[in-house]
Image (cartoon, rainbow over all chains, first blue to last red; front, side):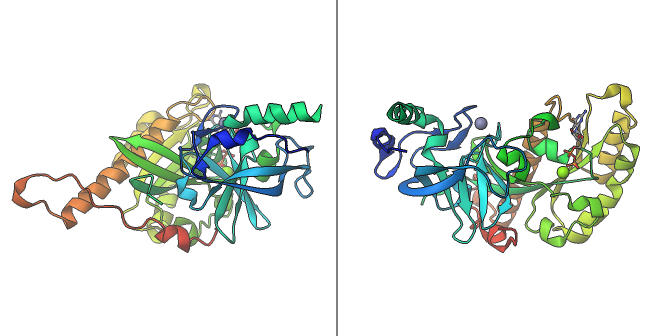
Length: 132
Length: 208
Ligand SMILES: Nc1nc2c(ncn2[C@@H]2O[C@H](COP(=O)(O)OP(=O)(O)O)[C@@H](O)[C@H]2O)c(=O)[nH]1
Ligand SMILES: [Mg+2]
Ligand SMILES: [Zn+2]
C-alpha cells in the first residue's frame, strides 16, 4: 500500500493526538486529546471482518501509524480481547468493533491504529484514491 | 504523565452460568452474526470512564471467562475487586437460590469490604418469570445490598446498575478518606488527597 498520506500530520500536536480519538463507527470516545503519542512502524493487524474459523491465521493488513498508550488506564473507553499469543486486541467499548489496535502484554504498551479511528477517514480516503 | 482520573474501580460480575453476565458487560449480540475477529476470540475486560459528581471514575470491568461453570471462582479473580455485581436470571429459580452460595464464595475469597449489588437480569421476559421482584428486593435487604432488575437484551437499566455500584464505592471510599484524615475545626474539607497509586492490584494481576 503506498503511503501517500501526509494528512495525519495535522492530527499531531507536539507528538501527541491533537483531537479526541473516537470510534469510526459509533463515535465512542477512545482517547482524550494529548493522551497518546504518535509512532510510525509496520504491523500486521487482523482485519475486522474474517471468514469464520480464521482466528489462528487471520487475514491481516499492514498498518503504519499508531497512537501509543503507555498506561492502559489512560484509555477513556476501550475493550481488551482475550489473549492471543502475547497480544490482546483492542476494541471499541460500545459497539465492540475491532481490532482497532493491540496491546503488547510483555511491555504493557497499547497501540491504536490511526486508520481505524474516526479522525482517519480522510487519510483512509486518500489511501483509497492512491490505490486507484 | 498527568493522571486523567480521580478514582479507579475494579468491578466483577458473578453468578450462575447462563444468567447473562457476558451480555450485561458486552454488547448483546445474537449468535447469527458473530463473524468478526473480535467476537470469535471474545473480550476479557473493558475500561470505561464515567463522570460522577464531577469526579472522573475509571471502571475496569471483568467477565468470568466461564470459570463459574465449575463453581470455582479463584481467589485470583477476586483480587483487588472493589465492586461485585451478583447476577441471577429472573426466569431461573435455581440461579436465584444460588446467589446465597455466591455470596459465601465472595466472603471466602474477596476483600471483606467489597461493595456488592444484586441484579435480576432478563427482566423483559415477564411471561417466563419465576422469581418475583419482591423476592429479589427481600434478598437484597437481607444482605444489606442494593437491587435492580435489568435486561441486557432490551438495554434496560444496565448502565444505571454500574453507575449505582460505582457511586456506592466512591461514597465508601470518600468516607474512609475522611475518617483517616479528619477535617480540623469542624469544617468539612473536600478530600483532595490523591488516590494511592492505582496500579497496585493491576500489577499483581496474573492475567496481564
Ligand atoms: N431474553 C434475554 N436473554 C438474555 C439476556 N441477557 C442474556 N441473555 C441470553 O442468555 C444466554 C446466556 O447469556 P450469557 O451472557 O452468555 O450468560 P453468562 O453465562 O452469565 O455469561 C444467552 O443466550 C443470552 O443471549 C436478557 O436480558 N434477556
Ligand atoms: Mg459468560
Ligand atoms: Zn464503536
